Image (cartoon, rainbow, N blue to C red; front, top):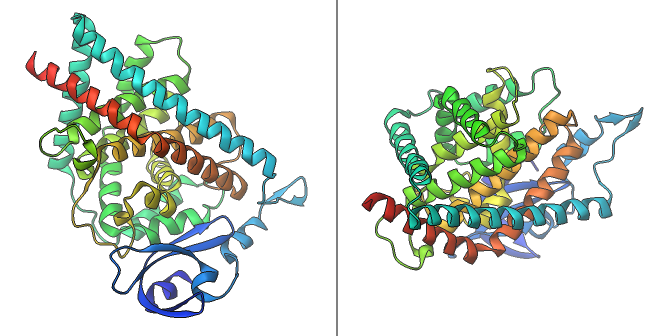
Length: 390
């Protein structure tokens, strides 16, 4: 059964029992599919395996067919990576999440110290970050326009450009972007990818490299992620500030420009020399890797999926930070692979599966540290207040 047929169904047999409702999303995960099904009368959808809803253990034929097309040394490459090797990679991703969160805490602590000890140069730098964040968000709200024509077709065109000469895009990734994402989310993302100030992104990275000439690309990327994650979240908060930030939404519509800008900046941190025509498609593909159906479900922002109307763009402050960290991690991993000349996760099944699992492990660890992240945001709010009052 193809994805469109699944979305059209209204009656399912959940473990043999007939249930009426609607499908909110379908996630292709390695060699199987999972379905987010909202039972009639219930407020939220739940994820089920395909076999639970259809009484079949059929595997995803797309992944199976694709994996047979990739060869290595004359032999068909196996998509089932060594369990031990994969476990090590997932552990590495979790450790990376811990280090990134620690780095985020230190980033805010350094800003707090700059304010406390009235370090003029540091205060000026923090103020510039804050003002630049506000300016970017305001400009994007003023200039962004809805994508003209069929958004899915535009996405396909961008993705095709990203893989010119490097192989066929992974079908699962293509389906996530064109079939699973909500149209409004895809429209907004494509708009921002098209209007982002590329020269500004380059100049921002050049300045960071000038300030920290000995840092490798991975640490420059870390600095960029911290800056964007904190200031986008603090600036995007809606309404007043109270101690419990889980009750305060952040305007994702307003902070998304900073997320797109961050991805572009990380690409330049690695001195990526992709042609201008290829870059937008790469950026879109990275978002597809980082924010697939399962990741969005874990983050609690499943309203970005197809057939889920977006009543508003408000998300939790800690969720916004975790999203920046996760997208930042996926971007670093993508360009680390690119500069090393290894298989790309957007054209290699094996590389795709490996990175997908690493992103899942990273996200899992970041969510486990949600309370720590929330406390860090509260500290950042304090810094913002002091800057505004100074």
